[in-house]
Length: 365
Image (tube, rainbow, N blue to C red; front, side, top):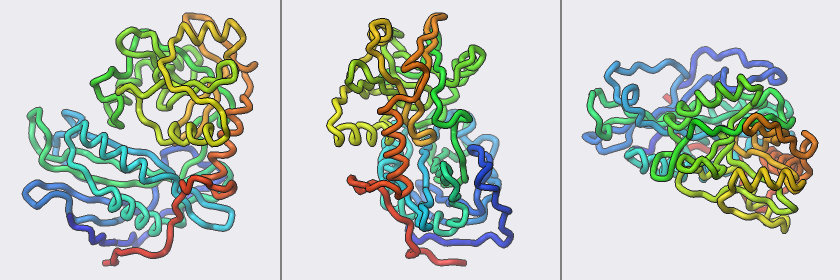
């Protein structure tokens, strides 16, 4: 694999947005990373950083027709003293290769993906915002680019990384949200692509999300696709519950995404000596815990929102309030600690963060 990254700098730089008024996923930096795959050329080749721009693809490009694509999401943070930190990026690239395997996409060396990302952020480091609660969202993704109308793995691919300065993912921020439990539509089943981060999983969730929003809910609580009985995920996040003093989260079963934030939350809780149980969690069990006054907290976890407290659950027309609709003590502590580690405000006992340095193996054109 060609590992020499070339860089073409943008001649005209974009005006940077007000960091105090950032939305999510609408603004992009001056540069992007691209690398192509071609079986006949020996695999992955021509890694390059170029000015951010539209790309041209043939109408018969396989990604448009068969959805052979994967992506990741992670963030870079600017500390009070100007350092730029990445949070566990190696876990994202490790997961990307697992998604690649499920979607029959050639793997990419994980250490090289990290080098490419660090180099790109170094080029666009002025885009990492410094306002409270902001970050630089990072979107690595792979699309199949062979021009062919036929159902088979592509022989050509494109790996790209784009960057976007962002504010809070949810307009309500850390405030508790209302979640609708979905009984009709399903997200995935074991043996499907639920454990992979691929676009089809997300487009399949849109109808249920549309229905939930009509009912005044921010997100959907997904049940398993077979019995429609066991809790899996909440929207695009993993989910946790505090029941009678214990933290419970659905176990990974082949249809639940192995979230980096989920993994970090579990490690933090165990570090604090708090019981964490990974198991099948039925909706019946959760309703009973609520009726018995034992459902103390509920929250989703993911890169975009980090920790999102759940204040209400809408289940079969019944609105179940959790913790009086307020942020729970554990949810708040997890949010404060994790965001503190990510932004360098809190000690990192796990060596999770990586600092972006000035060194680069690349050369400019």
